[in-house]
Length: 311
Image (tube, rainbow, N blue to C red; front, top):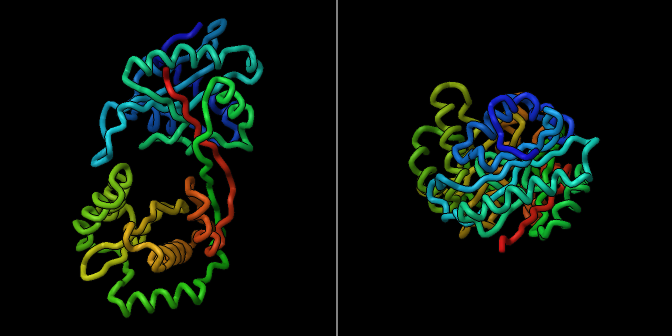
C-alpha cells in the first residue's frame, strides 16, 4: 500500500533511512529539522510504502511554495531528496511504484522537471553518491532520469596546514592594490548583505545572516567569517561552522586575482587555531576543486545530479 506520510511514521521512517542510507547518518532530529520543519514540506508528496503494517519504503518530493530571498523563481522544478526501500524488499517494484505515484502530483503542482537532488535549503546531499548507492543511479536511469553534472565532496587535515608562498604573495599584492582580507566585525553587516544579494542571491544569504546573528549572541566567534574588502566594498567572503567549511565566494568580476585563495587559507587557519583537526564540505565542482587541493583537500565523495522532464 502506498499512502501519504503521517506523524506516526516518524520513528519507522527514520529507522528505514538508517538501514538504507549507509553513507548518510540519519537521526530523528535531523529528519524533523530537514523534512518536517522545511517550509516547503507537503505530506501529499511524502509517500510511504507499507506492507503488513510495516513501513518498507519512502520517497520525499518537494516543490517550492516559498521563494528563497532574491533567488530566480524555480516554481517549475520539483526535487526528490530522499528515497529508500527496505533492503530485503528492493528490486520488487516498490521504489518504482512510489515514483509513479509521486510524479503526477508534482506535475499537478506546476513542476515541469524533477531533480535529484540539489534542493535548498534542506538537501541531504548534492546528488546520488555514485559509490555508496550505485543501484540508485541505475534505478533513476531506468525510469528516464538523465545525468546533469557530477559535484564532489572534499575533506582535508588541518594538522599540517601551511599557507603556500604564492598565496602569501597574492595577499601582499592585493594589499598594495587596496584589497584587504580581515576578520568579520559589525561594520561588515550591511556591506556583506549587499554583496550577497548582488553576487549570491538565494540560500547563502540566509546562511551567512544566521552566522552573523549567532556571533551577536556570542554563540559563534567573529573568526568564523572572513571578508575581502576594497574601500569598504565587499569583494568576497569565507566562513565555517565547526569543521564544515563554507559557504565561500568571490564577486564574479574579481575572480582570478587570488582573493579566494587568501580567504580560504585565512579561514582554514582560524579553524586550526581553534584546535580543529579537519575541514570538509559537501559540494563543489572540479574547477574549484583545484584551489582546494592547494590546501590539502582531497575528494571523498562523488555525486551525480539527475533530472527528468515531466511530459
